[in-house]
Image 1 (cartoon, rainbow, N blue to C red):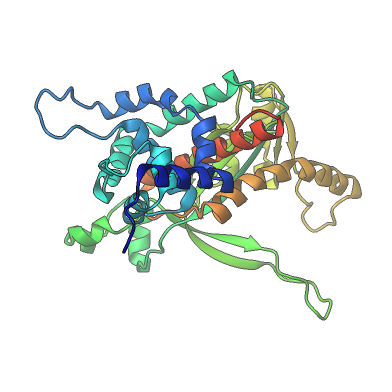
Image 2: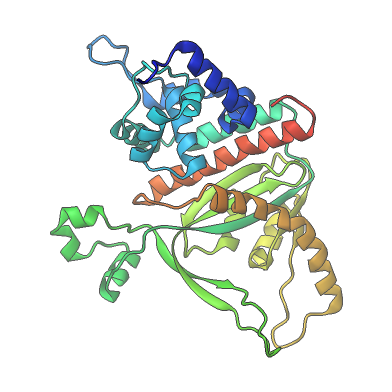
Amino acid sequence: MVRQVGFFDVDDRLKRLSVLGDQLEAYGATVDFEIFRPDLEAALAYGDGAKGGRPPFDPVMMLKILIIQTQNNLGDDRTEFLINDRLSFMRFLGLSLGDRVPDAKTIWLFRERLKLAGAMDRLFGRFDQALAEAGYIAMSGQIVDATLVAAPKQRNTEAEKAEIKAGGIPKAWKEKPAKLRQKDRDARWTVKFSKAKPRADGSKPVDIAIPTFGYQNHVAIDRRHGIIRTWCVTDAGAYEGRMLRQGLLDKANTGASVWADSAYRSKANEAFMAKNGFTSQVHRKKPKGRPMPDVTRRANARKSAVRSKVEHVFAEQKSRMGLFIRTIGLARAKLKIGLANLAYNMKRLIWLNRTAGAPA
C-alpha cells in the first residue's frame, strides 16, 4: 500500500534539497525578480480583466520560467514537464502542488510577446542598474569579444543562398508558406578556425576550419567584476571588429582601457577609441610575411592574461547552459541570447556575493 503524501513530507523534501544545494534557491535568495515587474507589465500590456476569461499567469513567474529554460537548455515541452515534476522548480516559481502550471504553448506565447515588444534590452538594463546599486559598478576597463552561437543548418541551393543574401525570398518558398516558416533567412554561414593538436611527428599543425551556421553574441564585460555590461547579436557572418563602433563599448565603465583580440585592430577602431576617451589594449597583428617582433609578442601575452577572462562567459553559456538557437529569425535569436546574458549575470552575482562573504 502506497502511503499518502502529506504537507510535512513535501516540506522535509524541500529542506533536504536545500541541504544538497538547490541552485534555484540561491537565485531566489539573491535576485529580486520583482524589479522586472514594471518593465514586464509595460511590455505585455495585459488587460484589466474586464472582458472576463482566465487571468494571465504572473509575468514575473513567467520570466523565472525563461531563466530556468536558459540555465538548463530546455525546450518548452520539457520545461512544462519538469515544472510539474520537480519540487525545486515549483519552489523557485512559488507554485504549490495544487496550482495551475503554464503549458508549453503559454511559455512560447509569453516569449513571443517579449520578442514583439523588444523587451530584452530593458530587462537587461534593469538588472544592470540593480547590480550598480548593489555596489557592482563597471570599473577597471572592459574586455570585448564575440562567440558563435549555432542554429539548425539550412539545406539551401546556391541559387537560394544568393537570393537570401540579396535580401529576397526564393520564389519556390513563397509558394510553400509552411516551408518558408522553417527557413531562417537571418542566420549566416561562417568559418571558425580551431587550433589542431600538435602532430606526433613534430611537424607544424594545421588549423582546422569548422563551418558554422547561426549568430554571434558580442559582449563587453567589465574587468573588475566580470559582468556583461553591453551586448548585441548579429548573424554569424558579420565582421565582429565593426561592432566596437556600434555601441558595444560601455561608456559608464570607470576605466578607460579596452582589451580585445586582433580582430578588433583597425585604424577606424583605434581612431574611434582615441576620440571617445578609451585606451586601446587591443592585440596587434602579426606583420605580413615577417615574424612577430618579440616586443609585440610579449605585449600581446600580457594583454591575453587580461582578455582571457571573457572566455569564462562563453564557457558558461555553451558548456553549462548549452546555448543553441532553436528558433527562426534574428529577433528570436536576440531574445534567446539576451536571456543567456541575463542569466549569466545573475549567476555571476551569486558568485560575487559568496566570494565577498555576503549571504547568497
